[in-house]
Length: 238
Length: 276
Image (cartoon, rainbow over all chains, first blue to last red; front, side, top):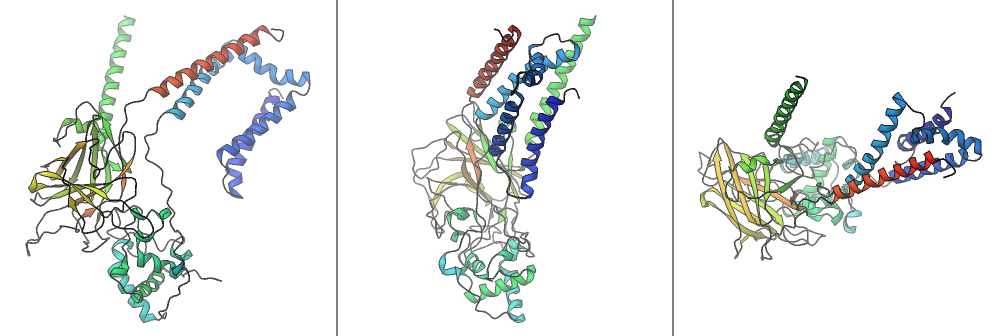
């Protein structure tokens, strides 16, 4: 097959790129772009070594490429293609240089930890209020009065939520209270956004520090009402 | 004749191009979208006390959503202003920030404010209140009220600590038109006052907004929004744009030259053959 000598290595490179970029993430974490680049460079080196092992294989592999670049005996489409490649290469290099040296107009990226570790005194707490229908109902009443303006119907979309960044937590989302213990919620409600550690960016949180307005018992009831209303179960040590 | 036709086509091309540019220029800034930052663009003259100056139309507005202040007592559950649209301009010496928002009534107690962090420490967006595990810094608040017809330069570090600065460096002016407030705040890019936020061209800093609708309740005569009962935003980003930097164009040209030279050498080498 004519051109097969170039087609196979090209297909190998493209195939490997697709595998590293899209295939690998199916089994493991996505590979960094620099690692994919390194793998492709190794593959390319391998292809070059293989193709230049003998004089004949080198001539059949590199010959057509060299003739295309030097423009020997070309006319028509090939001539145009060569000129296009020769013109595009410097422009591409120029563009790459421009984008990598131009100053950014984007604000700094924020890397906020959504659930930073609670202080030690909260980690081992357990809910002292019995989980009775009456207590759950009282908790839901307190939730409606104190929490629902922002957290809404347990979905984080209350009428006061729209201006806040980070947005109020959505308790129906399986990555919020379902993966946290009751003691974690107790800490977050009692100490509020300002109680977060530095990686939680406390200066941005609008969560009130409820210890000034609610008794501990009321907070525990709210937690029970919250889990019940959101249809979630607290995480336990098992 | 052919040449004349070509010239005509050129004219149409220029006309279409100009129309397209005019549309992008004129209409573009009106399409305000939810944003994360505002950049004060570099200009030759800053409309420091003119909220209606045509210069404002030359920059795109950033739009930020507002929430009722529910973070600390006394809370409010519903507020008039749902969004603020913000623009910025500077000339290297003066910086001006224009807030624009919908308010159905013009009232003497209508007010608006901009908040910044002061110094290197992060400050909580609610008046720089103390944080549990992080040592916070103070905030600088620019406060404008309709009936005062001026802006006040203030500081706070926690609730109940709001204080008007001894050194006032601000200008502020509001104009009410067609159900909209346009309020411009302006100040020197840098001041000698350690209580003020300082703008370094090219550097993003945090910014937040607050708005009070000064309408009175018809039954009680009390103000609907006052003090901590206001519309607030979260922290977003603001920067004073730096002087244009052309070095990356220079680097790109240099790279194009090098790449073309590389091609030239390779082709010459290939044409001369392996013996060369």
